[in-house]
Length: 339
Length: 256
Image (tube, rainbow over all chains, first blue to last red; front, side, top):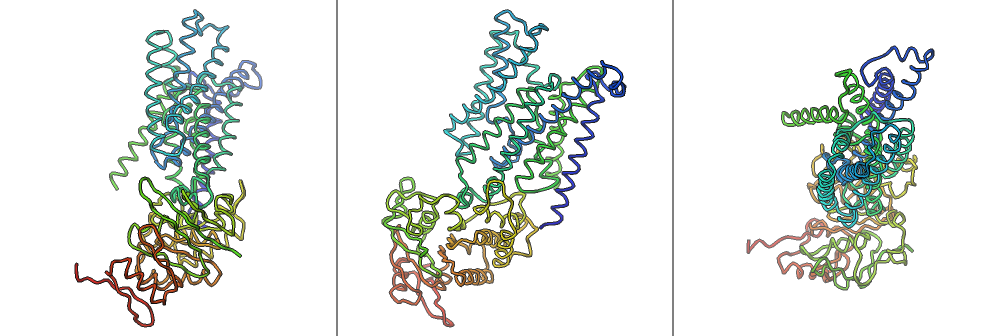
């Protein structure tokens, strides 16, 4: 076996595990208004501190990692499926679908006179938004599949994804024109936010990570075979149509779950697989799982920074991932141009 | 008895009839499929590999219609090498060759020692063991072709269907390929290869001569009737001569 490659892959896994563990620890020490390590020390003695750390910071921190993992995983699957390093997990219409779902619920509650900011209605409204975003994301992907007449052709699929994205965004705009009250909620959704993550979200996200991870690990060999061309993959016994549909399903579930819990978080799904492939080139199985871990670490890092950078104010985490991811890609482009 | 055959197969690609009533049985040894461009050679090979469905006639493997075999079983019995591949990516040479074991692996099973042994053997046979840690994009066209050949050998199938395996190969490596094929034949593998290089094809045990989507002639490499058919399908632009105890196809360059 290839020892230099093996060493690089092992080093990256160890690095990601240690980095994630450290960030999970750091995340417990950062509140929504900046660093407050004292709460961490008082967990044993103060019920308030225990509540803050156990019920707010811990699920938010773990949830951010899990959301990032879903996005990283979905990004690696997307880039493998489309054989394009610029493929992004949102490009099959899941983002605009989720956004429309959220806007519709916000508009409906605004028009029916129930402000969702009411404390009593808050939990229910949040659940409604999560479900609407998830359903919207799946609907977006289904529309894309319908328009592309299945997942057989990458180009048709990509084109259909773009069309669905544009059309569903136009519908969102239409709804916010009729019900401007939904605008703020939509804006918050588009910026991405890890602040609402509770233990329930963590459970849903964790199930998603395990399911998407297992399924994509199973499909990874077919992804590798597809590198040799679809005819060669078929000659090796790969069922192209089933494989591609299953890969799209993994993408849809992973991104749908992620956006439904945190809103749109940009660039994590694009950058994590890039980083992994750069640091440790490997077969798809490794790349997909390591991209999950890298996505988790990246989003958690961004989340900790979002909480502490301009404390006591919080930066929307989606803004931060876009800035960090964008800077990374610009650096990558610059390096490529230089070589 | 293991047997691969096509019976009265016709294939239409878009508006074009690519194969018309073709019947052929792959016999033991090495069979080369030759003919002018557009004769339907690759289409025939693809139909035999189950990569396209004939609109008439059928392909049979061991007495049973190819479509009735499960994907994995078919993949274990028919190894196919594409004419050209733009394969790139993160896989090392060894990992590419390992893909040949895909039809033998279960849902979550890792490759067993005998899979690895087959991979070693395939790389040794295709003479590419030395670059097993390199990546495809770091290799020359000829080197890459040998890796892809090793991938096909790694399947360990009783039938090897090679579509233009000599693409990008220089004469030294063409000779190496002939050695590989003969080694496979000695191990009872039946090899069917599409070849543009007629002199190379005349090293095969049998030749199938195609033109216009039909089998024009077939026979052993020494048969004068086969040579006459070859000259005919190339409109008399070649002649076949014997040099150093082997047949060589030479082009007439008069009109060039």
